[in-house]
Image (cartoon, rainbow, N blue to C red; front, top):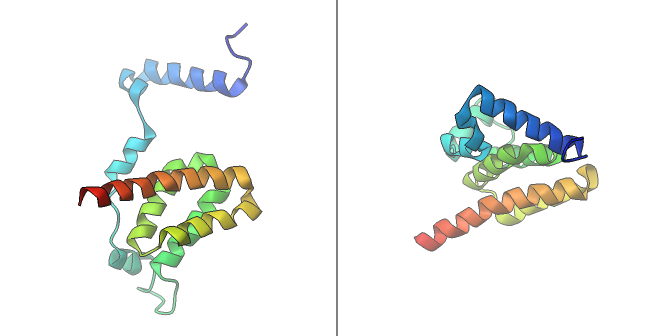
Length: 137
C-alpha cells in the first residue's frame, strides 16, 4: 500500500523521483525560474510583431495581451508561468491593474470561479512585484 491514496500525489512523487534519477539537479528545479530568462518585451516591439505591423487597423498589443490572459485563465492552473508572463507584458503594453483584474474576473462566467481565482492569484504575484519595485524607487 502506498503512503497516499491520492493518485495525483503519487504521480507527482513518481515524476519527482524519476527526474532526480535522470538529473540530480532537477530535484530543486522550479519552473518559476524560467520567467527570469525572458525579459518583458517593450510595447513598440510587441506592436511590430503582433499588432499593427501587418494590419494597421488591427488590435493593439494591450488588447491582444488581455485576450491572451483571458484564454490562459480558461486553461486554469497549469498556466501559472504563462499567466504571470502575460500580466508582465500587458502591464508593459499599458494595461492597468483594473483592466487585468476585469479580464480575469470576466472569465469566471466561462472558466469557473476556481480558474478565475487561481489566475487572479498569479496576477497578484506580478502586481505585488510591481509594488515592491515602486517602493524601491
